[in-house]
Image (cartoon, rainbow over the protein chains, first blue to last red):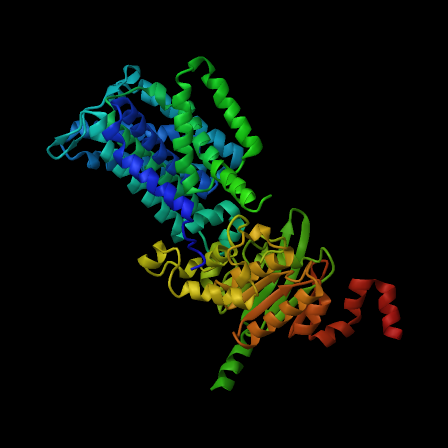
Length: 318
Length: 266
């Protein structure tokens, strides 16, 4: 089976180790560490969403935080309005974000590259303004309290309680993204990224592929918003601005644009780096910037391609 | 019965271009071109640089829309149909300046060529290796000599192999009409010979109709059943290789008036 290359030995060991650490985490660590883990898993899903539109389809979407925010508000409001199991509210959040994403995708059809980046950036800014000023729905600049998530009789009141659910939903989203990427739809996304004219000649509806990729990307970001509501009790519009979009973009690029493993690894590695940097807030921005510049200079294809290349060099004795 | 079919097919050309005119602003790139391509033939469109060959080619593959005229394919008027519907009708094309999916493997490039066939069932649509299609892709890689490059990124191949990926990908559409835009340009002699063999095989074994725009006369003269010669956007000659080669208008268009005069008196 030439197209499905088996996992290499080291990658498999790494994967197994990661799963053990992930599952055992709440047993031997503090609530704070679990909180960070929850947050990282949400960022993994955000990165998966951005991977679909930028990594697979090559379309610059700079409004990821807006779709994330729509997911957070929509699922929190749905959860408050009706007494249904929380996953229903999460799906509602994903659907609303996805629908807005489809709409933005349709509007964005006429634009590409830097123009598309600017237009989506503008949409993201507008959405943040809506979050901050639509008082009757979002409670405006005071932020919105998120009521605890409920799975039947279980009510989630702590980070440790939420963790297994967050992990589960994250794994589901990873599986979904892999399935999309491997499918005919995923191939049409990559065809559009590589050459729109050739994609057209192969019978691919380029417009449809672009719109659908925006919609899927936004729906996944919206779902991440629902995951956020699993362990968070409060959302404030300040955290849904351009910095968050740039943070997710940085994760995807640092991990390696165009690869799912890169999106996941980038979220975890860069998420941990920013957590460590929190200890030295006065240097945080500078170190952030320095890391990005170094990556762009020495590892433009991302962390994992960089490590892979070094391993290959070591094996061949240079 | 075979004879009857053939008679019916020769009566109506498989691809019929009538009065094709393409203007860009005030410039007429092609003016009133008529061209009929017979089913199961290799038809070449040649002419000096700027004659309007590629413009015509892009009109037939629906990347440009003509100002006037009509294009009929297999009895269907395709003059104003969108380009993306061509693959579904069985019309495949290659690109002169290569439009490969560079970051993807050769296998995936050709698999994407089969896009219109990969969505027949839900199972096929979600599969990374849809049944029946993967086998066809492997066969095409074999026929185009690309099997050992299946897992190579297309952009890492040399030019000759990249050109073959273009053709393999077009063939994955399972076309009835194959449009090739300068498939031999930039190829070495050995590669041109392989292309020559492949195209003849596609005509003989697969019954494909092929229209090619080409500058490499070695290939054109060897494989074409019929040749249309364009110069400054109008047809100046049409016929078999021998007829075209002997036509003074063609010699003049390519080599200038004096050469044509000399040739006539040689």
